[in-house]
Amino acid sequence: MNQTIWVGAVAYDPKVVGIWEGMRRYFVEEAGLPVEVVLFQSYEAQVAALLASPGDRLPRIDIGWNTNLAYIQADAWSDHRCRPIAMRDTDVGWMTKIVAVTGGPVASLADLKTRTLALGSRDSGHAAILPVHFLQRDELVEGKDYQTLRFNTDLGKHGDTGASESEVVRAVLDGRADAGAIGSPFWNAVRNERLVPEGALTEIWTSPSYNHCMFTARPDLDPSLEQRFAKALFGMSYDNPTHRPVLEAEGLRQWIAPQLEAYSELREASAQQGFLTRPLA
Image (cartoon, rainbow, N blue to C red; front, top):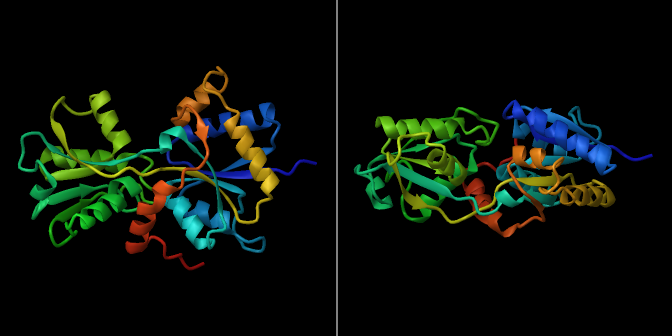
C-alpha cells in the first residue's frame, strides 16, 4: 500500500486553494503519488507541523512549501536535518528595490540619512529583513541613521500577500515616507501593470540577489518518498496544456533542484534580527 505524503502550504490568498487542488490532482491522477494537502494560516504553524514529533499534539506534515524564511527556520530548528527538495525557477535571483518619488530629495542611499524608509511586514525577507540587513552593511543603521515606517499587515504570511508592499508604495507616494523597500517581483508588477502613474517612482538602490521559496522535507521522511515527490515535480511541463495553468498560477515555468548558496544572506540577517530564536512549545 502506498504511503500518503502530507504536504503543507500557507493559504495567503484564496487562489491557493485552486493551486493546490490542481497540484494534488496531478500528483494523484498523473504521477500516481498519494498526496494530501493541509493549508495553514501562517508559516509558523506550518514549520511547527513539519518539525512535530509523532507524540506532539500538533498536525504533522511530511513536506512544507516554505518561504525562504520558513525554510531557514526549519533548517535551523531541525539542526540542519530538514532537507530541501525543490524550488521554482522564479525563486532564483530575487532582489530588494528601494524606490523613491522621482525628482524628490532621495536619489541615492546616502540621501536616506535622517529620513524615513517604509518597510513591509517585519517577517518579510524581501521587504523588511534583508533591506535592513543590507543597509546596515552599508553603514546605514535603522534608528540611528534613518527612521522606519513599518507596515505589519500580513504577519505570518512572510510578505506573500503583497499587502504590506502596497502600503509601502502608498506611503512613498503620499509623503509619509521618503523611500520604500519592496521585492523585485512587486516592483516589476508596479511598472508592468501601471499600478502607479508612469514615472512617479524611481528605483534608487538594488540589493544583491537571493532566493525565495523551497519545498522542505521533515527530517525523518523516508528518502524514497522524498525522491518520488521530487521526480513528480520535475515531471511537470509548461508545454503540457494540463500542467500549464497550475504552473502559471504558482508563478513558474519549471521546478528546479535546490540552489542553496543564495540563502546565506537571509540566514545571517534572520539570526541577527532574532528570527531564528525558536518559539516555546
